[in-house]
Amino acid sequence: MPVFATLPKEKLLLSVSVRELLEGLGGEILCCDPALDDLVETLMVGAMNVESALTYFRRGSNKAVVTGGDRVDIQLAAIETSTRCLILTGELRPNPVIIGLAEERRVPIILTRYDTLKAIQIIENFFGKTRFQQQKKVDHFVALLDKFMDFAALAAAVGVPAG
Image 1: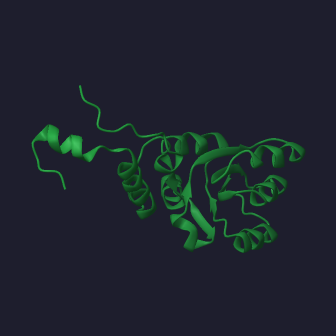
Image 2: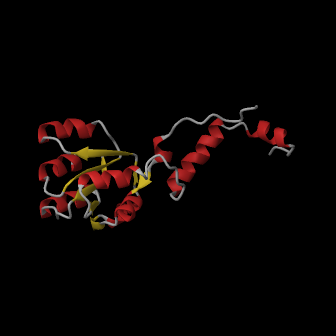
Image 3: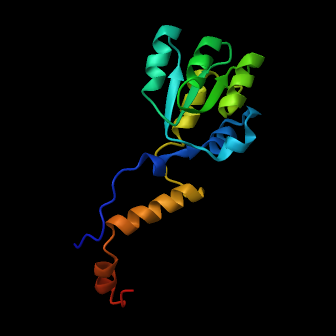
């Protein structure tokens, strides 16, 4: 069987938008509506002590952080790192200082009624399922095809003139 392309695994193509997370959780957006189309590549849970939180959060980029709405220390640590979205569970509204800092850093905050475990279970259903609803993903996929696809060999195999 001929192979016409081998594409690398790309986190960007497996990412989900903040909007998809908001809709999937049936949540409420508290700030940064313009960032709803930003892409989230990884999910991290903030359930540790604050000393460990910064080290842990620095390991992930372009992430959504799920934590309790009462964990101001974890929320601050998440916002200080490369966080695309903060998801607060238990329908507990954050401190206004957190909202102000999130707006300054352009980090949307989603408030959900679910507890942390249930929110994570819902979110995990989104990751690993490639959707091409964002132009950034389409552009990246086209660039990958241009780089790795042998279009001439494919055209020859199906009997279509290349070009």
